Length: 81
Image 1 (cartoon, helix red, strand yellow):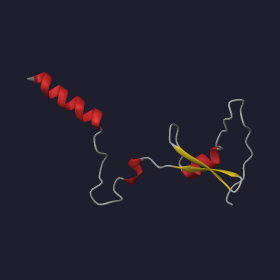
Image 2 (image 1 turned 90 degrees about the vertical axis):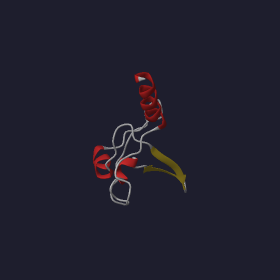
Image 3 (image 1 turned 135 degrees about the horizontal axis):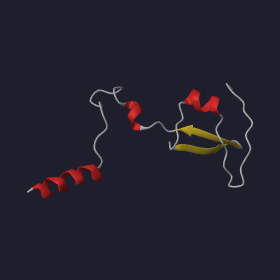
């Protein structure tokens, strides 16, 4: 085990990930985490955002546009006619 920290559970059953651990795992506000129960222990796993994979795989240089972005672009083109 690399680091042991003690945290308190809030009245809303929330816990704060200590700064040292957040920084070592590069956890940022709003990121998605996976939580599992393994052998009686709560385990949090960071799910890296897709942007972290850009440049690591051939052909994945930047994120693809979302359906909503494509729809806005198409609507804007139709409005210009």
